[in-house]
Length: 102
Image (cartoon, rainbow, N blue to C red; front, side, top):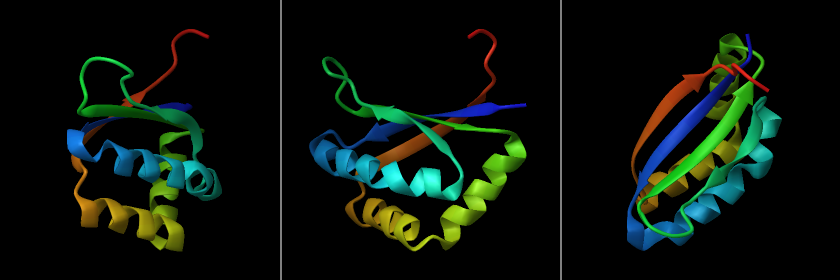
């Protein structure tokens, strides 16, 4: 069964530009590692400390394989390190969704 991972990020509102760079870095990494990146979003108005991402997979098993690939991909590791070094992501939550309508 296909699944889509919904990620909710809580950000340091003073480092939104770093999160935007972090998001752009995933554009080539996620597909290479097996995910179908739907996109990253940040509010245009209103709340300034949240962001969202959606990534789809053929199955939960495909997601697990993707996570394993991320840990060995040089650019992926560098992007995780970038986030850790700059500490612009304060927390993240993952929800696994299944599509019920098209």
